[in-house]
Amino acid sequence: MDGEVLDEMVADVSVDVAVVGSGLAGLRAAIEASRTSRNKLAVGVFTKTQVMRSHSVSAEGGTAAVLYPEEGDSFQSHVYDTVKGSDFLADQDAVELFVRKAPEEILQLDRWGMPWSRRPDGKIAQRSFGGQSYPRACFAEDKVGFFEMSTLYDTALKHDNVQFFPEWAVVSLLVEAGKFKGLVALELKTGKLHTVEAKAGIIATGGAGRLYTFATYGYSSTPDGLYITYRAGAPLKDMEFVQFHPTALVPSGILITEASRGEGGILLNARGERFMKRYAPEKMELAPRDIISRAMYTEMAEGRGVEGPDGMTHLYLDLREVGEEKVKTRLAGIREICMRLAGIDPVNEPIPVRPAAHYYMGGVDTNLEGATAVKGLWAAGEAACVSINGANRLGSNSTTECLVWGAIAGRAAAEYVAEKHNIGPVSKAEVERVSKHVYDELLGKAPRENPYDIRNELQSAMERTCHIYRDEKTMLEGLAALRSLKQRMFRGVVDSSRYYNTNLMNVLEIEMMLEVSEVILVSALNRRESRGAHARVDYPKRDDVNFLKHTLAYYSEDGPRVEYISPTITEYMPTERKY
Image (cartoon, rainbow, N blue to C red; front, side, top):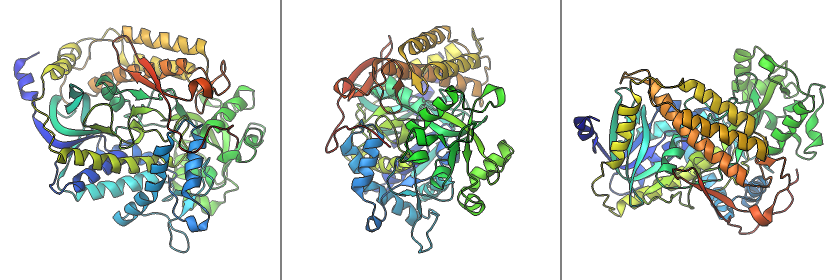
């Protein structure tokens, strides 16, 4: 590699707090870090998209919080719902903190201008969500993520010490002796690799994203933050638990919010039967997502599905009984999506749906403050695993988690910087490794195989072998397929341009996808039980004796090294989970 290029790269940007990711958790962290210290800290937000293109804008249904305990809801109820929904794998001290902080974040957004939907008495409106005992999902029509993102972005822009670095893709963290010192980012506009010195860092890049063919994630959602933190020495926790949202539009995979069922929508099979009465007779369509997804899969597998385009079997979500007025006011975005992309009006016709990969309960292992195993580095939102979600997340808890731990991590990082931690000079070793990989190994060299074929095979392998139902034989086949893909992985990118080289970015993303997919499969193979979203046909029972514990996966050159730790149980011992 050209020595002059390397010299240009060393510490060409310096900030106090580097936030990686510009979704709900990243923006909330940046705001909190910028206003925590007496002395204004320089906060940099690094994102590979434009800020308002972060995937958080796609959140639709609601943000959970106990706002009106005088009306029957309670913190205790929210805690228990979340712990039970997690199949008792959640850390209960984290859940308690989460539940108590949630109302503060809802009201903070309200003060910043969030246009919450209102009840006739003027109070913030709430709706029902699966697994929640009370209607506690605060909403703004069915565009919650967009309005929350807009509110946070507008607020962040008022802080002159927050600087945005849009279309800067972070590809590595600079860590020495277990201490965070900065990061390496690829500026997509110029193709230049930048090194960023930072006294503290916050990973807020979302989950593992599009590892599956049928998924609700945007195409830019890939496991960048998980991969770079994993490589830097922090373990990934509970990655075997992948949430499949029951209702994604066929054939596009776009999310049809759970709020549609909270407003009264029902699920029907090909015979017109409301089949959830067989699987969750009390909660029906408002059972937790893992239970509904398995029920839908069973209905289709047993021949009660509807044959759709490209052989994509589906079921129906029926909103006709919800009523035209409510659909047009509370589910307007869903109606527009159905009309534009499926040619149907849900006021008059049922929506074709099937489960899609939607959320990863696992992430970077953190403590209650969001701190990782790397000193000076925090994680928040879906990228983190604190863990409040355990084996299954309840709908409407995720956006709340982003807000709560965005604030907690932002404050903790700022306080850490205020303690005047001296990071010292940044070593060139990791910078040289990344630069060599990008400039010498990839750019301008013909790959051995088409990278997009590799990505498609990866997604197909995950879809076939590590889906709603799993078993050892198929997961071993999936792991063998992934490791074969890693061996076939090219060392070249046909496009040699430095400017907006999306081919280069895609190749880097595929490398990350392969590594994180391997973590998911290895973790799933080692968990020989069924719990929450991890349903094994060869081990159909939950095993609290051997597997009431979190999986920790550490990076090694030979593949993930797995260890286990016990969850924190403060009050609720595991019981049979019924709905």
